[in-house]
Length: 323
Image (tube, rainbow, N blue to C red; front, side, top):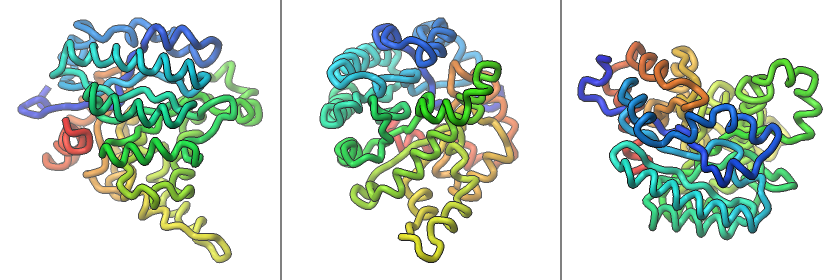
């Protein structure tokens, strides 16, 4: 592929599964991991061979959803620490090909902040990835009890990747139930993931956590879960007469980065570039839920200048993640 003529390619939303974690989930939460278990479990030579064949030099590994957000605090802390240690071993075995995002036990926010620090300082991880809502209450990550995680991420100068999981059960019943059985993608990547994760992004901005910790860096996949496309309208709506008002567009473009994971569309990328600039867009595939091959081929054919293409393919990840 001509894209590889001296060009480094870093993909930053690439998933694996830890057997101890995956074994804890049943039903819809565990279905995807079981369906894709061969690719998710492979973090060795076969995965690297696939990377070589498609022109990907580095994968930043993160656990597939749902992760520890669904667990009780004690179990979440225990399995997160053990899984992070095992991910460190995976990355250490191929240090030039793999890096890691930490798994955080958000049901215990203080322990999650401490685990983030341990993973960055001791294990060499590049940040953390959080899957959806936390605990039996299904709390969004903007809730103040989670602010110690944002505080620690700012102090460590690492990003938090806000990643989808299955939406709130009440939302599933009210919005998706009639069609989810025959059209499971409607509940997940076809709309449910986007709706839930975009809501999380908006709530982070409304919560005030970004003003409290102004060095916070947020990553969202799938070209920002529609938020770059809606920035103008959301900003207008939140600042109508009588509203409290918030500089939504300014805060989003200052604190958020988006990735191309599972979204290889020229018009969609162009919108993100126009709203955010190429400095805030990073390449990702969303492997194995999305095949690796289409992503690099799409980037190869993009009508984009070499400088901006290099930023998306590797430069922005090298800066943001210190790779």
